[in-house]
Image 1 (tube, rainbow, N blue to C red):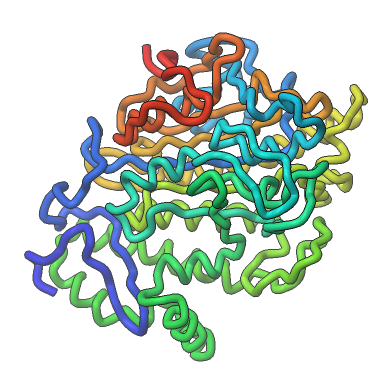
Image 2: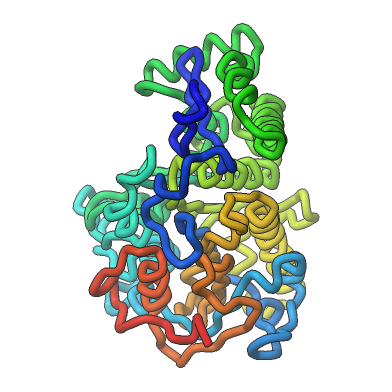
Length: 450
């Protein structure tokens, strides 16, 4: 591997593996990148979904604009406060019944990234809309090995009745490649890891992964020759970057290996939990966040979605002293004790968001920026208050600099009934994939810049 051949698409290879590289000074130029904007490098985009709404009094900052405060639920974001916007006032009208009756939770997931009213059915004739991530993937996905990455922590079901006559497909998916095709999510960190680093087809990757497990060796042991060859051609700074990156990969792999094979006792599941799925929910989320960071760092994909839990999830949170089911608690009826428990669940989810954002912030991608600078990370729910099941004034955080196109460090309030899809239109514009509309959009959000 000669120096002149080192570019963004160079990979370390061995035993069915393809270990992508982070950005380094030795890369010939930034010309390997498409989907660029003012920041120089490619933009990344991710969407994180949480179910059952939030406790808004402990979510919503009391001050607008710069110098906003972080209420109890958002306090874990203190270290990245200047890299995000808290956006109040957005609405998902198509999450409302609009004549279809009950089923708010199923609608909340299906509408989250589509802005489209789902057809009420528990049969095979499901219909929603194309989600914003898949709109972007259609245009920009050809530039990376994977057009998009879909992650989750609860596998859910793809058929049957999960919510008042709505198919389980609606509750279990936020990503839709067509009106009738949800994009299934991967919930096992090991499988995601193997997909990101494996070469060849699925059967080949699985076979080689089994060989490595039998030999009890790291993937990095099998790319050692390529690694040594590359290091001999790198400058001192690049050698250090490569070593730090590979140490990070090895650490993630080690944590996956330590993951318990037992079912998460905080959630009663009627399906088998595959090897590599941690019993610790927080570790499960963080490993999935690590997968997203690695995928962005290696430029395997630039688009990701992550369901921290399925719509209407009744997971228990015993690890934070909340043994009650989340969905049950969300029907609080104004009970102060339930409010207190809900806000702790909300805060736990935000702690995991903070982990992802800090990992992105501490990961360089060249061009004088970090991955958070070059990303747009949208976090939120399509239900505002879990008791009312309302779909206006949604809890939304937009983090990252969008390659210098977002004016962050603010609490922003938009006009009542502003479609959530207007935010998606604004993100697509900055991502370099503008479209005429998505869902029920009426334009863009001018509030994202000053």
